[in-house]
Every structure is written in C-alpha cells, then in structure tokens.
Length: 205
Image (cartoon, rainbow, N blue to C red; front, side):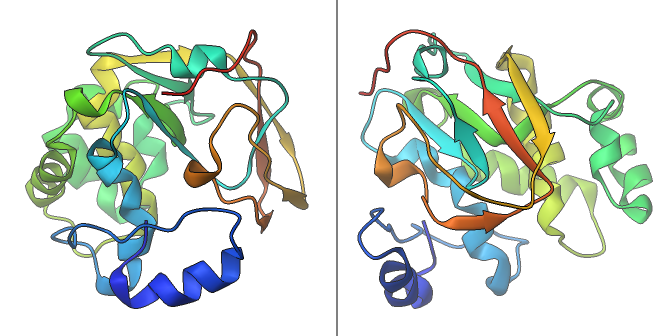
C-alpha cells in the first residue's frame, strides 16, 4: 500500500508483479514522506480471513502453511534477532519508550518484517498504533519505530515461528505460498535475508 501520490510510480516500477493499493488515510504522527513505509498497519482492511505482511528481503524456501494457520485472537510472526525490544530504538528514544512500556522494553520481541493476522481481530490497528506513538512523545518519527510500537500492541498475542537469518548482499525476494499482492518480488539490498522454515502445503484465504 502506498499514498495516492505514489500510486502511479509504484505501479510502474512493479510492472504487474504485484497489485498496488492506496493507503486508506495517513497515520497521525508519521511524516508524509514516510507514510508508504507504514502501510502494514492497514492489513486489517483487506478482504481476507488471514493476511500476511512480508518484507521484500524475506525468502521463503518452502510453502508457508504454519504462517497462514492463525487461530482467532493470535498473530504469527518470527522472533527478532535483537535481545530485547528496547534495542530497536535510537538511543535518545529509549528512555521515553521504556517509561511508557517497561515490560515490553525488556522482553524479546517479534520482527515486524514478517507477520500474519486475522483482519477481523485488528480492525483498529492503525488507531492503536497512533495512540501508542502519541503516548511516547518522541521528538520525531523514525522508520524503525514501527517495530517496537507493534510489539506493544500485538506482542502478547504473537506465536513465533521458526526462522533463520544469514548475511546477504543483494537478493530476489520470492515468497512461496504468499499471494503476489502481498509481497514485492523486486530486487532488494539488505544485511539479512530470512529463511523461514515452514512446512506443509500453502493455504491462502
């Protein structure tokens, strides 16, 4: 999902490899130029029983049956490599976050680059995110903030699935068992790619 102003460019760049949707509205507290990076908050607006968000550097090596098998009220994700959620925040933001969310700060979190949920459980996810962001009173917004904030909202409902990470330079994102509308199969550069070890046959809603 992208802001309306970016729709034409995003559609042209993907060349039909993915359906590009327009963000329903801006997220309060997030700068205009960063709105496209927070589209995951609107997963719950999609007409499906279960939906998944997958970063472009996630590589699936087998069908993702367990990812899709989300029980009511739960979220499926993979564990983050950071020892605790607090480590994902810039140094000057840590005290503000820890003051509002002390238990989450000290806990092991999930990686917001890959998770699946039932839209019917999270219709108010954008509003919850905005409330958590406002509560922290950060001096500015940084792209990394979505992960710790989503851990405060979804964390208690998350079941972490097995995964592995390995260093990579440039790779092609390919998601077996994930519909093309949910993942950009574009070339991407990153320090890590995720090899998610899910077994069985894929299931989409």
